[in-house]
Image (cartoon, rainbow, N blue to C red; front, side):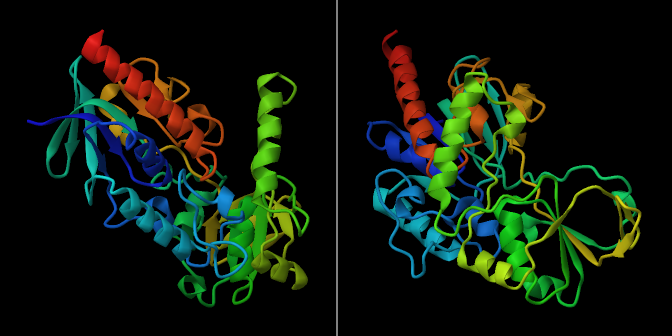
Length: 352
């Protein structure tokens, strides 16, 4: 059976970033992706989603996204960009391939899928988080008889026609869905912390730069972890429109569920037909279960390199795999560093 130098699992923004830097070396590598086409997790987000940064902050390494029709790129523009990015660099991708298991025999990695089996000297996981939405525990939620969906399953208002909706969770996903859905439905927004709206003339560049400063302060012990966030809301046009309509108000997420709605902290009841959870995601690491290295949804890493196994890296899962590595702009640096480590590892295998 053929033995690859590198197998990348996942071809979202992290997998493609790694592939871009691998392409600079004469390696036999392959990307396995479980989607039917390019786009990664962007294929699963709601129809009207907008990025909130200009091209330089919304592009992968090496090639800038085309200027969008409006101020910021939308979902379809970014998916088209990813598809063209794959073609531009002619990445070796097999899809749809669902990786079910990764094991290590002391020398090689064995990758089991719903089809073929693969062997590789190294593996880079870049499966992201979209397949593993996070829903916090709320008292009484098991009694709620209305519809519940996570933001990853929301597409457009047609799904919830005529329904009164509770949207839980702040940040840009919550703000954008509230802004859209409030045009057609009765909506109540509930957030865990007070809302922070950026000035109208400030975009996602501020979020990244501000998060960078906070992250450095966190490393120095000058900032508590709970104070570090990328959750400030960017005032894209749809959110500005919602503000003009007076709907950008949220109650605190201090309530309990009942069968037909919630009971708020002050004791008042309110009925809802549906709930949308805009509460984030956890790393999708199920493919690593047979390696017994996942603890509390994370793996012990040094940067992106897994500490307890040689030849295994994880890219794009959040700050524990490199600062801002789950963002379009931030993943490039961690991908570059990862490939440098992979090359060094393979050289040592051959000559060491």
